[in-house]
Length: 336
Ligand code: COA
Ligand code: ZN
Image (tube, rainbow, N blue to C red; front, side):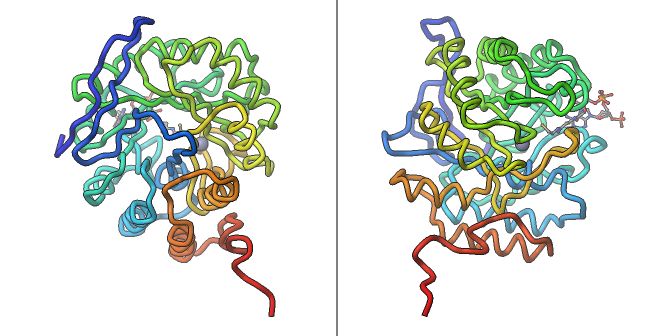
């Protein structure tokens, strides 16, 4: 691991492994507690945003996007994945994207779905491994060709690999608010999956609305049920898709439910190749604009972030769903 120094695995009173927060020499420590007025955004655009895009994306564009996000103040960036290039060809050059990331106080995160991917990610010098467990068994089979139970066994191996390199593991709990194949997933099933994830030693569970089916009341219900099941040893986050225009409302419901960790995608890019109908993640700059308005601290420069979104839009030659790109932050463009 180049220049890396992370939290140390320790047993908590609940018997789970947790990561002791500490000051890192370079990367941002994702396990450290947040200030009372702070929210922590992970931009997943370079991974979730680009993995399903219907066109070739050059390595140069990926690097410009990722490094632009670092410059705009993002502290967490999911810059790629180490999965089968046959399953997700767009992520085949992830290693080069990670290698091109600048020295900065940023957590460089990579999605992995098996032990092999975990080794590849560690080898590429990433700071955080991101696992995926699907609440629904059907989506688990579609996405990673494993049952949920088998994926949990694989996650345990991923956590072992990460532990050897002293890296924390965050886990997306996908289809937590509904599945493209099974419809609504019962709350108890989602809570069971969260409990299984927590028992592996992951420091964070990110509840993912993969198909953009959640309404604000679902956010309150699922967050409360999962929190009750996993206790306070595990951080909870939200990964929202704006498929039905409810992502910002859902983020607000998340805040009300005590969530301070959010995934988002610059420009509102996104989708999942294995979940029919899945569209973009909640747009990072729209989310930052909302949090700014609410007086929360993101550490992100909104104008710089909008400039990154504009560059991505230009490079891809596709109109992105970002509201900030069209309207700009409120009160900044006055009519004459
Ligand atoms: N990195 C690179 N290649 C990998 C790999 C990894 N982490 N894991 C497996 N592979 C390769 C295998 O070597 C094999 O290659 P080959 O056909 O040339 O021999 C191929 O991928 C298939 O491997 P196999 O073990 O037979 O798995 P599978 O076909 O059952 O697919 C996964 C299982 C998990 C590897 C595959 O579904 C996958 O990578 N999914 C990723 C899904 C994803 O990223 N979703 C994103 C939304 S969350
Ligand atoms: Zn997603």
